[in-house]
Image 1: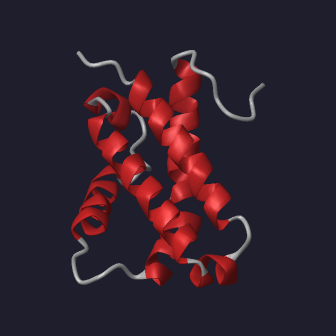
Image 2: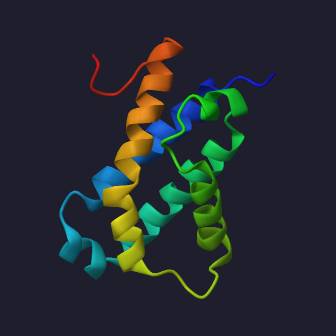
Length: 118
């Protein structure tokens, strides 16, 4: 059985970087290709890491749309019909908090460090 710890850490770090990338607001994000590229790359890393989590870990959090995350990763990687930044912004602000809560809980259950718990 694979160890989820490394993937949990990747997800947590990716979420931190995504939040940092959008912290200055929508206008700054939409005006900066550099920020967009950084956020999209971290969304991809985050999604790939969630795909590698064990089924048992994912099953414990049915509120997270694991299949949707996987599908979104494919859009990011393959650029199906281009990437809609409005949709990316929406996902970050509506779906990412649910994932963040679940992965923070998963990390705590495994005794891993969680940002903000220090």
